[in-house]
Every structure is written in C-alpha cells, then in structure tokens.
Length: 248
Ligand SMILES: NC(=O)c1ccc[n+]([C@@H]2O[C@H](COP(=O)([O-])OP(=O)(O)OC[C@H]3O[C@@H](n4cnc5c(N)ncnc54)[C@H](O)[C@@H]3O)[C@@H](O)[C@H]2O)c1
Image 1 (cartoon, rainbow, N blue to C red):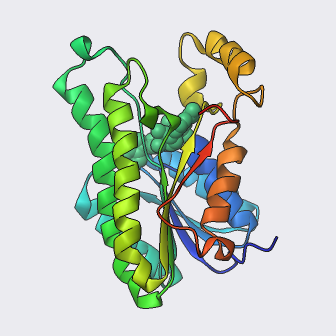
Image 2: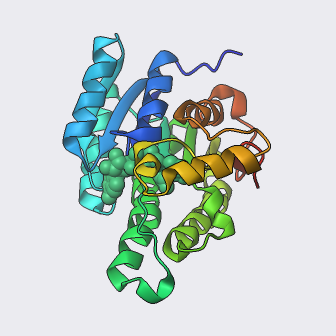
C-alpha cells in the first residue's frame, strides 16, 4: 500500500528517543521531511543527524512542548525550512508513577502539562498551516493506561484527556480535511520502560497475558502512526487505534 507521504512535512515531538525516534525514521523511509523535536536537544540532533546521513531530510529543533513560545518558534522554523507543516505527532510524554497519597502536586502537574498542554500548544500552532492547505494529519499518542492503571493517576488522566482532546479536535478540524486520531500503545520496549526496576517481571507478565504473546516494539507504533498520517487514512478521524497486541 502506497502511503503517499513523500514530500509531506511532519513534526514529531519527543522524537529524540524511543517511539518518537522510530516514528521519524519511518516517515523518512516514506520520503517525508521531518522535524525531530525534543526538550533534549542533544538527543534530537543525534536522531536528525543519523537520518540525514541515511539520505533523509531532517532537522532537529529543541523545544519544550509546555512552553507556547518555544512551540511557536518550532513551527516557524519548520515553515522556514520546509515551506509548511502537514503532519503533527504529539508524542512527547513522561511518567511520574506512584500511589496518589505519595504523589506531589509537582508530579501531577508535570505529567498533565507535558501530555495535555503540550498537545494543545502544538496543535494550536500547526492548525493555521493545515487549514490553509486544506489537508492535515494530527496523531496523538495516548496509552492503554487511559483505561486506568494503579500508580498512574496523573498519567491515566492525561492519556484519557488526550482522547477527549482528539475527539474535540476532529470535530473542529474536519471541515478542512484535517484528520485527528489517537494511537494507544500497550507496553512498548523503550528505554523508558526497560529502565523500570521490575522490567523483567513486566515483560514476562506481558508475554503470558497478551493475546499476541510479546511486548510491543517501537516499530509497531511507528507503523500505526504512519498509516494514520497517510493519504490512505483520510476518512478516519476522531478515533483511537489500540496497538496493544490485543490486550485491552
Ligand atoms: N513505552 C511505552 O510502553 C508506552 C506505552 C504507551 C504510551 N507511551 C507514550 O509514548 C510516548 C513516547 O514514549 P517513549 O516510551 O518513547 O518514552 P521516551 O522517554 O523514550 O521518549 C519521550 C521523549 O519525550 C521527550 N520529552 C519529555 N518531556 C518533554 C517536553 N516537555 N517537551 C518536549 N519533549 C519532551 C523526552 O526527552 C523523550 O525524548 C509518550 O507519550 C508515552 O507516554 C509509551
């Protein structure tokens, strides 16, 4: 299936590592121009450099998605370099897991801010360009945790919130042929989760309880995002694609 992503310009937030890095690599493999955006400028630059070495069109932009001015500057740099922005993947995220009685206000705020305010800032900044083009794709990275996980009150609330945001945005943006969808990954083997102290038992449990008996790989998510960002998914909007190996 031809995804027709060649020549499109995609911004992926949190693309210096993990799932975001796999998404930009997939976009480049499809011939898209990519903006590797991350609060960690060194990680973003390393990814962009590797993609350029492989013949891709990629720039790195250091931006904290919580900061509206930095997000506006990221979009301005994208337009200056590639002419417009066609695709946004709101991928930046983080966890601060603990029972609610131990959770500080700062633990709550940072998770809600990065995931929800980050998606708000970035979507608001790209939509004028997509409206002008009468074409656009926004893919928000939620999580299976939107269903609720122990020790993840902040993260589950943010990842459920991103689904409400996705639905509201799909209603607002559709008139200009812009689709807005969410991808909800299950357990994906990234540095973030492999560094958890109980990673081995998480992996073993996933292998036992997931209908597809393995943990997910970053490429599983990149494939789903590439499809939703493509020409082929132009009549899918406001939806949530679970990429969880059937564990739902
Ligand atoms: N790994 C999993 O099992 C899993 C499962 C479900 C959902 N997710 C979601 O997928 C996304 C990517 O996760 P990952 O596992 O690749 O994690 P990761 O930690 O490898 O990557 C997240 C990236 O986001 C960046 N980031 C953090 N705060 C930021 C900010 N304020 N502004 C800009 N960038 C920021 C980090 O620097 C990092 O590069 C997240 O939204 C995460 O919640 C991951």
